[in-house]
Amino acid sequence: MENRRMMLLRILFLLGMAVTAGQILYILINGKGACISGSCEIVESYLDLGNMLLSVGGFCYFSLLFGLSILLNRKDFPWAGPAMLVFLLCGMVAEGILLGIQLFFAGTFCSYCLVICSIILLSSLLFSPAWFLRGLLFIAVEIFLMGHMAVDRIDDKVTLDQGTYGVRHCSSPNRVVYLLFSQSCPHCVQVLKTLEGCSACEIRFNPVQEISEDLLPGIEKIPGYDPGINRLFLRLADIHGIPVLIERRDTGLNIIRGEYAIMEFLKKNCFGSGDDSIDSLLPDRSFLGLDGDSSGTCSQDQGVCRE
Image (cartoon, rainbow, N blue to C red):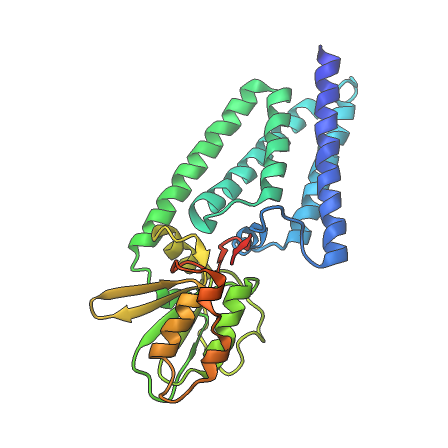
């Protein structure tokens, strides 16, 4: 039974090495990590370390654990067992932090992170159920504390202005609108093209994740913006698709969802009289059979677009 348990443990460590090595290779070939859900970039934006460095660290971590598992049955390495316990517990603590980030800050789950988390949890359970329970206690405390941090963040006068990447000042603005978008969402990109000709609204651009520097030329960039604020707003408002346009009014916020509804709003409110340039970008809604205000959206985690 002991030999079988040790064999399963080594298989898990080898699996962790294979997954992280595969991720490293994928990054080298494609320039970004593999992610089933497409939300890994959002979670990664909360970490100071890049995906490559995290994957290399993960590969080294599982390689170390595999090496320790080889030394466990050798009498001249009595420290291998305690070292294994310490490293597995450290892995659970690190995964607890990542789970807290995904639950309370990113608002989405990273499939790659969850795979690594599952391998570490199963390995800990196999090696020492007692230490596994201790690790779960650490994770519970971490998630509890990070949940309180998220609540404090909401209460600390968080506004959409803190999530504004940049502002396009029009010549005669009659209203202020915020566009919540993602660079990887085609519906968002179409709306961004439309806003290049705006002449009657002040447009504040609020991306849900980091964007490239050359995406929005000619705007006034706001230093220190936080895209997490925009994801937090969408989560609190129970909005699951982008783009979203938010008009600030004296009586509150007017929320317009979806590319096509946003296009129509812009045509009526943000273009000067006689400016028909937006008409060529507006789709024939009767032909497409669209009737909801959320049509023409992408999921927040850059998943499937709803046409």
